[in-house]
Length: 293
Image (cartoon, rainbow, N blue to C red; front, side):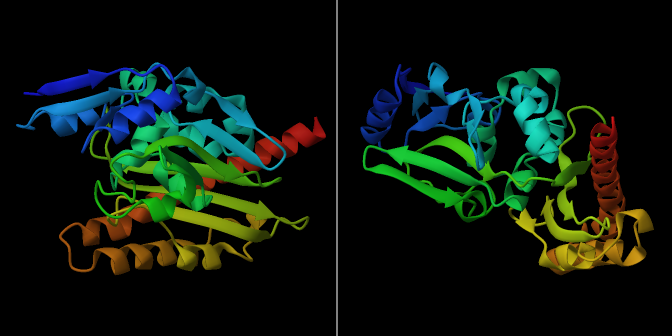
């Protein structure tokens, strides 16, 4: 049963950071969808810092070069945001794939990152784009890549008194992206394997830039240089060739080694990648139709 020793609901970021600095191991309550599950069997009383009233962390904005997402933005907001859909559809698709409508309405991108689950849906798209987090404490602020923040299963580089304020990524004009996952069951599906793919093509429809990140096959999602290099130079009009799927299968095999799930995931990743690429191609066709319309 969850035991709360002290409960704080700060009204400003400064109050939140102060409350966290005064406690040895405070727990941050944002959406609570991960926190409540993880703490239900805790025996020791906890200090909770509820940041739900920090409405300045619920915005999605863009400037000339970046898209910036407040840490309290929910999955529902992400999946419907015109800014996210325009600049990075894979992230919107990943948000739409999270749990149930209730979880998507409550869960936040900051919580998803801070929980550092290997199966977190929004992290592969963020890792693929070299997304950054802005974290803060009473000692100041710092930026680091999401990939560098993650330090293993449910482990991060965050200090106990640090709070994630925002997540951001660079805008890449002309980029197309897609996300796909394979879950354990149809409803509330937890990823057994997931993939985010982002590409940029030239005037001849040849892939010149590729970003691919895999989830649920390692302690944390990661970019695959092997799959990316296999995609570069391929033609969108030439279809999906077998070597692309072979590369994804080899990457999974290398990460999982002799684990019991390895044979299944080596084959499953082929279907996941096919789905992700089909969504990329659909995005490209949609963009083409828009230009010609």
